[in-house]
Image 1 (spheres, rainbow, N blue to C red):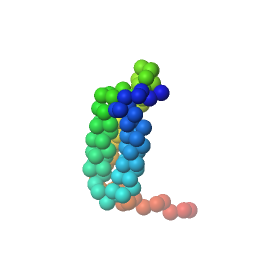
Image 2: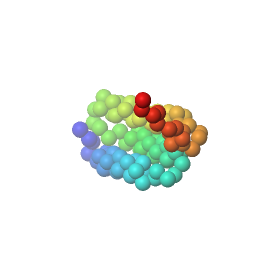
Image 3: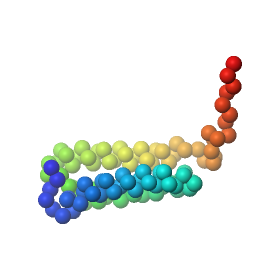
Image 4: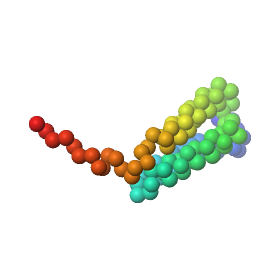
Length: 101
């Protein structure tokens, strides 16, 4: 379980708030450039990862390690997403659907 220290008890709120911020950011900021959206997501994820490493919220080391590996992979996925998006504004909107035969 979560340790009784103040920073550790803040962890469940932090993880829920982070998810709400990321989902709200993705839904509401569709008019912003993709690079900006992913950069802000990566920035918040790195801040969250640093806070997690600083607090180690769980009592058992194994629980902390599992959560840390999970967050590192999620951070890597966000950074990988940054490199996978096209530099063009929108390739998907320029393509036309194939006509049915």
